[in-house]
Length: 229
Image (cartoon, rainbow, N blue to C red; front, side, top):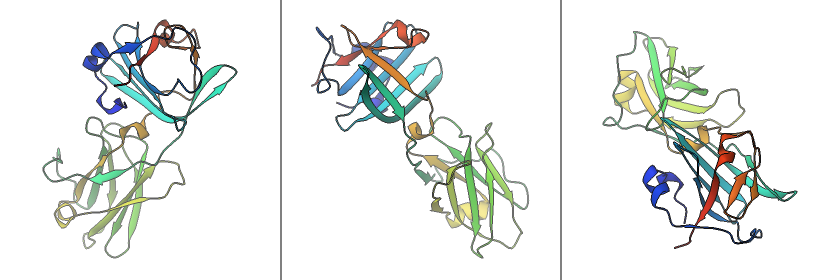
């Protein structure tokens, strides 16, 4: 079972959970875990048999998470995030609704998930002539704006994390979006833009997994493993 994309209060409330009668060995650890015992906080942890993990956290109106690799060190389960490639797609005309028309002589790319605008995204605009311009998204509205001569036609857009040496992900711009000089780019794997923690250590308890850092608010609860269906 792997339900991270569907994490919700309903899932957390109705999940069938199991307790550990004794600390499990490494072969028993993989699976889905749901946080119990912390008010107004929902969280799910998936530990894969392949040594990978995904973590999601919901508190109030905020969503956070991360993914990476897990291992056992000194009897602790250590989660280390790994930055996976961001995967964007061009939003359709029915999805993308510009709040206002671009100013004359400018091209605008809006980077977002289904719910939030994205910051720290580097955007490269390329015209049919080969002329290009690079800028970063505005953290307030996810917009990246460049100035281009009137005779240029927008051909494609490259996106990647700001201040990185990652390969550009290139997406062709439709004639309609090129004419409008504004387009939306949807991040299809939102967890790749999240940074819930730099590292997290868990210890095995009788009821499940517990955050080792007692100063963490999550240490008040326990991650209980869901029964396999």
